[in-house]
Length: 275
Image (tube, rainbow, N blue to C red):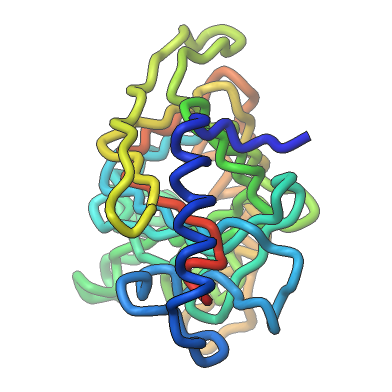
């Protein structure tokens, strides 16, 4: 069953455009999108993955991500791009796609994360800053128009003091977001919150646009931190997962976390991107 709930009239427009471009458009180089479709470079071409049908790109423009007692504002845009097969069961991307690794500054810095006040005596102001990078921890679910998208993630906590592998979530134990434009149904103590449905349109290139939407989820759980190790003054790394967890309220059960993401998305059949 095809899970992309695209309006019938848009499907008709796309199908007509595909037929026309197959007749008149010159062949594009492998992995090089046709003019006007350059933003879909994260979507594999037919040689890289023959089973894909739709190219997809979404930009998280702003919002916040809160798990446990820590809330991180999304102050820099994050892009997710790639391609899906017709059933939405497979997601793939090129080296230019996936989830863009954007560093978001965490309020309170590394001292707020660890509770180690004495670090101020050893680190510069820049060295005290802490960053969070959201990474994929599995394949995103299909972007169902007007509904939302599921997204398995892990959060990389970045500061030299923490070592290189300080994470909340992993591929084996991801943070599973079920982002929706609708109203959530979280367990307590969280109460339902509502997203904003995007403005749906298409352009002359038959790209479907979903603008000014707000995706929300406050029903997900978050695991404890792993791989966090104090690396300072040349001593052997000392695990501080317990400190990070106690200072951050991790692990945090469903009903105690929240994310709000303001997004613009677009999708198009792949045969237009790579005619």
